[in-house]
Image 1 (tube, rainbow, N blue to C red):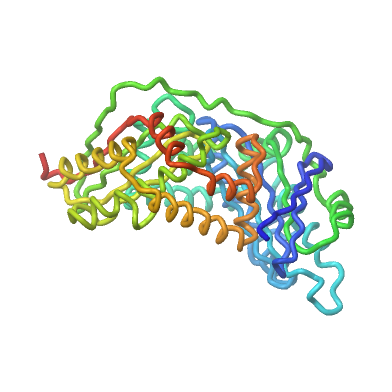
Image 2: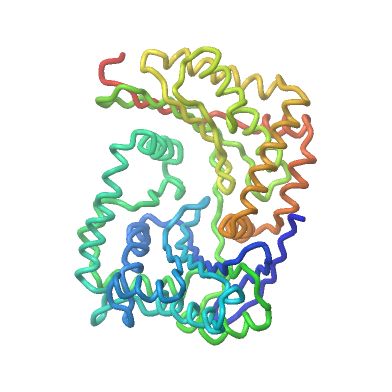
Amino acid sequence: MNQVNEKVVESGGLNVHLVPSKKFKTINFVVKFKEPLNRSTITKRAILPYILQQGTNKFPNRSELQQKLDDLYGAVLSIDGTKKGNFHIITFRLEIPNQRFLENESALIEDTMELLNEIIISPKSSGNGFDSAIVEREKETLKRKISSIMDDKMSYANRRLIDEMCENEVYQTHVHGYLDDLPELHGENLLTYYQSVLKENSVDFYVLGDFEENQMENIIKKHIGKGLSSTKSITSTNEKKKNSKPKTIIEKQELQQAKLHIGYRTNCIYSDKLYFALQVFNGLFGGFPNSKLFYHVREKNSLAYYAASRIESHKGLLFVFSGIAPKDFQQAKEIMDHQMDAMKNGDFTEDEISSTKELIVNQLLETLDHPQGIIELLYQQVVANHSLSPDDLITNIQAVSKQDVLDVGQSIVEDTTYLLTTKGEE
């Protein structure tokens, strides 16, 4: 019932993933460019999605590009950059209605594929660089994006926790780039870098929808891939940091609500046998509204405006997030520590394990109800270099035992506590 069929073929410099599904009335095209995180290139990668959405040489401004998208029955385009483990990924997404459900329409997929190739291969340029007016405008857009993190205290605390916890690790790299790099960026060096992305990144092209596979393969060969030359598998070492004494970082600003964030090293990643037990551990600890953190810190002791946890599947980290009154730091931290100890000591019931597994499976099923969710689940395998279908995910979650949760708990160690609090508190 939840089976997802995926056929992977190499075509013209692309790893093509064909995912036929009669579940949706749209066709989704997703192209992902992946390379290891690198401090020297991250700001260029951060600004590229903004520039690439502003026009192509054939549709030289945002209005003309949008008009072309509108002509394709309201095609929806988005481009962004994200961090997964030690990789940075630039993603192009384009969604159209399936031409099978449109009267007198037989060329929509080909027209869309041609436009997608134009957006990727032929962005608006002038001479040897991107259009300078676009670059300068989007530098201001990125500058505002980076600066706005200072005003979003939760995002700021997340970033500072990772800065401190992952010092000297590539995972520390800021996904939105750095203000200091912006003055050095111009059309020429950005286009030169983008051309290297096209040639050297690992490229995965997903098509999901109701289509005939051979016909789709032929259309892809006809329209996509010219100018791309890399099907190589790019890997990144997930350096395992030696566990050391936990550290506490306290930073003070003018604010009302403190942010208490804690980072743990799980020593367990997506490809490990106990990964599913780690998901259940996180669900019991802080992943859901009925978890230990939410109940004991927020509901029972009224110490937090929010308290939750999540895992980073490809880096092997577990993060706790909470908003507290500045005066409650010590008490809240003690309760959180106690709940982590309770998890490691097996202070949870079989019924709690069953309900948590059910919640995780329901989350997965909800993800499978969305085309983009399916593609992101499938791409997890590429990033992890580990084959695991959505059905396998669900089966393995359902098979997790209490002993599995206890076993993975023994590998979890606290690394860094970060407190962002008011200047008035000592």
